[in-house]
Length: 126
Image (cartoon, rainbow, N blue to C red):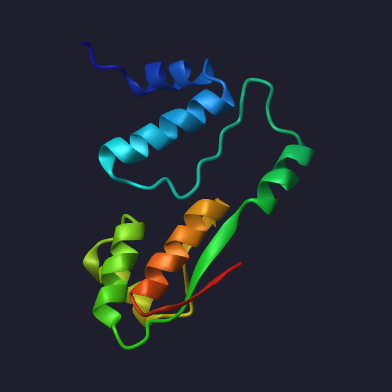
């Protein structure tokens, strides 16, 4: 299979519907064991102000309020939820209250909150 350029990939994504693109993102996340914290897509028709306001209602920030007693477990969880390295994740935990994820959908934000709380952290969603 020939390797596609970034421009060819973008052109291919432009032809997908929002639902097809959403399915692709889920498959991508599962295949590569990553999380897309926020994905903004503007279709060929562009986005209107009504769409932007509607999208904001589904956007949440996961705020680490305190690390608790199990700081190492919380650092590991922050690394699992983000693409941060060890030092960057430690800096996030040390500077609590701090946003771990910004602009995440409700499901992703709730899963992140549960995972961080299971590690011993105090977390809020905004």
